[in-house]
Length: 129
Image 1: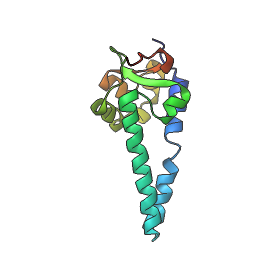
Image 2: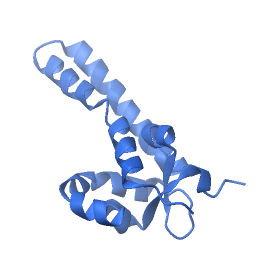
Image 3: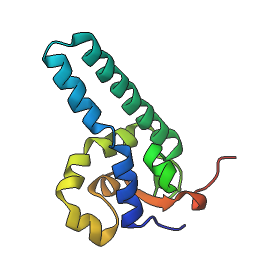
């Protein structure tokens, strides 16, 4: 199993959150009175995030991870984490952002350690049968 590098993980993270400014703009537009446009944009963003969460839970990959060629899998079975553990990983992303030195040293985020996951190059993942 080939572990993903910190550079691969960072690139995937940036690709996954490229749409973040859209949320800020949609919220600002909604708050200043462009209600339907802001609501539509926020709704589209919510659907996108839920689709990303579902994809990572089932395949180990989000859009960014797929582009970069990595996946998040269980450190023992090398299979995708499923819904609960993926949601838990996503829930602690802010802690990962606050602890970059730890992340750089071990190539594992706080969320990885909490859920028993690792990032691997996706070609080395166990393929479903």
